[in-house]
Image (cartoon, rainbow, N blue to C red; front, side, top):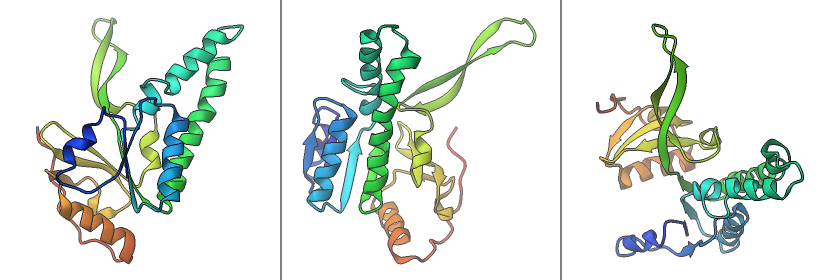
Length: 204
């Protein structure tokens, strides 16, 4: 089952794979949770969420919900009423993904954006903005919830940035395909360690 937030983009792959689709028009974390409940109730073996970024920054997502609560509150304090109601909503969404992943194979995609830091130039004493790479569009730290995390660049090169499978840790895989899925499935199901794969540096 594929939970599609990308304007029916999943249908472009219908000639290559067999799958069912739930197309979300509103991205409230509650709707994601209901879709995951439906997936489990109908005994889908694999669930793909494409993407979970909308639950954070999309229409009716956590950030929009937080702003709405803040606007209605007497103090208009985002760090008071806004996050006091928004954080439990997001936490429940994450917990539902984790509980689903205990019984089903769960694949989650996230959009990414350029991350910046503000720092002081030692020579001039002036503040400067520096790029520090890409970061997922989701609440900070979301990547720690998953067993395997990778960044896929525009050239379809996958760089594994976190893995509980040592054989995949920091591995770079150009155009990952079915073999990677088979290797991960074997690691998850048969209890045998995967053969060590050579770690290669990411492309410049």
